[in-house]
Image (spheres, rainbow, N blue to C red):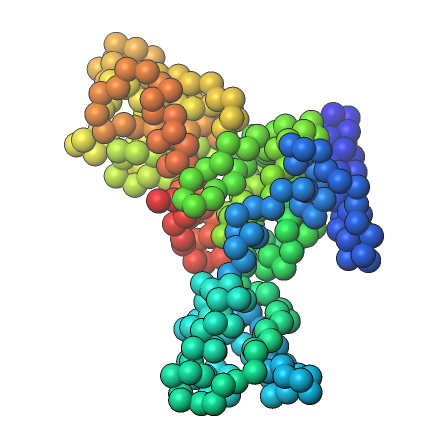
Length: 347
């Protein structure tokens, strides 16, 4: 019953997000967002992000370029595509760099190219965007439609992006509809760093303060609730995923991933359990376990076992590093298994 109520709440929020988008597409502006920019739709937010205030062009964008004089537009080229090398050509202005420049800056570049060609003074250049395809974001994991690369053709929030992908994946268990996504282990990465966004609050409690606008090249991953896996990371010979079974222990998991490297600090191995935003941590002395001085530590599904390289004192000191390794591991594993293209997203 709890899963059904959560799913109903999520569907309602996603439908509202789609409704706001539809209103905007029809020219009906939604009501203004509060001053703190809490909203379902990015289109209703009052503050524009830095990338929107300085909107630059990129490969794949399509432009309409013409000259404007007293007789009106002329020499109109309606579909000028920014090439893979970031350049365009228009009349005598050949191989002009467009990628990384705003519309106004590109106009200046074209005028300068005309001047270098020793042409008579040209009328002003008019540039109109036709299609913006260079701004993208990435979404993988437990979403209904196949995840991958999405074009950011307008401002979007996390919930709007999830709605675009068909919403979070659902399944059926004992004739009940259940969520297949696990917000507690889901995350968003921007500029190589995980953002402090609580997916549990957003998707389970409807806390719109977590519904931030996306930026180009954001990476969103929705973990699977059905993934009975353990993540063994850090100083082991083969960091990665270990299938969970009721008998899985920390020593068994480390052994499955090739055992410790010579640099491993075995006296304090960190186990992270629970959500990424509200984790429970355990410090396990595996040296004592191997010597028979302590019992083996049993693991649970989605535990993160992190083996440090050097001695440490406080578990919180390692949490960021453990979380970073987890994000890299699930990303590489998912893209390698599902898409066949391993990638790295963290700096």
